[in-house]
Image (tube, rainbow, N blue to C red; front, side, top):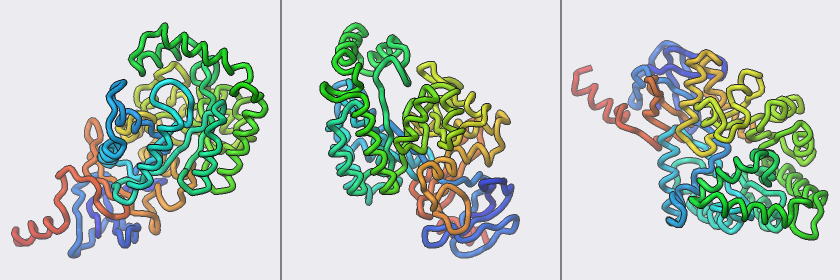
Length: 404
């Protein structure tokens, strides 16, 4: 199929008026200017054609499962609804970030295992290419054996190493952590504070369960990271707050610094050759919800490689477009943050750019005050269409009836 009369956003430049042909699920040809004709032609009517968005960190499935504390829906229903929402936001590859944690709230090892099993079984019937981003809490060493097994089985596509103990990392301020978690859980702050302090008193001095030293905890994490690297799975750190933390996680196999909380950590990650990924909601709003490093500050410092949805899939396209409109990057550079950048981080060599031979994961966007996704294709097949563009076969019928 040809898509004609489109503005094509390539990795390094924009073709203001061009055409792109898909064949066998791949991009087969790109032309500038002239418009081919044929039995299968889709007139983009001046819309902007970009690669499908790649989201390497999305926490949304937990909220689909339990939109309010205690109101639980089926995993299959949550996955189906999220699948629709992602395709409508232009996301064609999505990493579901699932926490192997022993903390409060929605995140636990048992829930992660349940979701992975359901999502893996449903993958062939889903519109978006769903993958698993396993988040390993280093203090929860009990989850290491099942996670190792999932890695060996090929069920995990990305591994992140985390330490969410209050007092460092993302929640260096204890009260910020308590306020956030109380709001998330719908509980009063005092009860959350007491539970958090009890957990900290139980194991914080060793960074692990009773009887396991801090050195052992990190050694176990390093072994898991090395296994992932050996299997070709990308490894990320999470919430790096110091250059020392960056060096530690790099020694453990990390090639990605996810959501660094200070500019010093982000700069250290770049200097050490790690990819830096920030949240698209942070970029769109201009600030972190927890008072940490702004994605815009990372961009201005030249240390931002990719944006992830974090908790809001709509924010990816909106943030990239806003960055381009504000002149912080040209359109190609801004779109790279949500396409080619994430693809490089995740070792996805077959997608993320409008380039012959790559996957025909494509999004047609109308450049309005808020950019709007009009059509999404994965592997050349339409997975979302809002009716703005006529289906190719119907379009040909319209042309024939008009005598054209």
